[in-house]
Length: 203
Ligand SMILES: Cc1cc2nc3c(=O)[nH]c(=O)nc-3n(C[C@H](O)[C@H](O)[C@H](O)COP(=O)(O)O)c2cc1C
Image 1: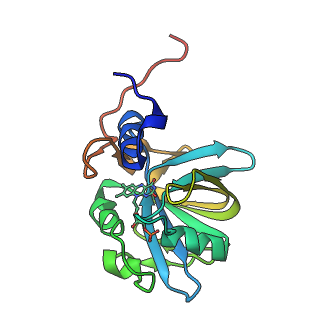
Image 2 (image 1 turned 180 degrees about the horizontal axis):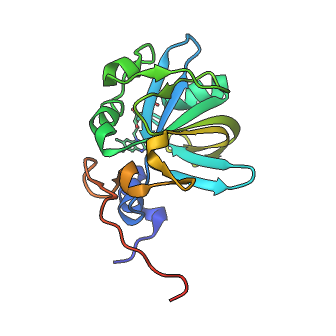
């Protein structure tokens, strides 16, 4: 089959793109709102963008009528966020934070996760996550036409925390990390990263 993206509505476009680009890592993003409330939400439209400086980006869609999600509002306000890496053991808690809670709800509490102070940014890190990236907003790119618009948040990583038990020879160990990926299909479909293979570069 062939598809012309111009013929697809917002939901059809999302489903096709999310089905095709898999598996996607999940940025579990912590932010803090104007009133000091902690927010957490998963975003799988995420990518590394540059090594030096270390730049990452992730895409935020809009709610049904085009309203901004709390994560975007908080980043526009505080200009800072933390990306926490999601592992198998964090998957259920992560999924809880994808519900549309009112802005005044602390999503760390809802998910049963522990906020711990970051070193260089105000939003807290998820203590249970093996990797936390403290980020400062670089810029936000906006795409589309209201109410079908999306914002792509770009930030510079100003500190990375990796728990020692996931490191060996200064590299993060993927089989220990057990990060999970988002697949296409129903919104509940994920994959593990424990079935890996290697390709020799010199072979
Ligand atoms: C695994 C997973 C990945 C998601 N990825 C995205 C994404 O890339 N962009 C997006 O806008 N929403 C994504 N969502 C939905 C948001 O997490 C959801 O809308 C959330 O309620 C936003 O929270 P907030 O209003 O506190 O920012 C994802 C949900 C899950 C479970």
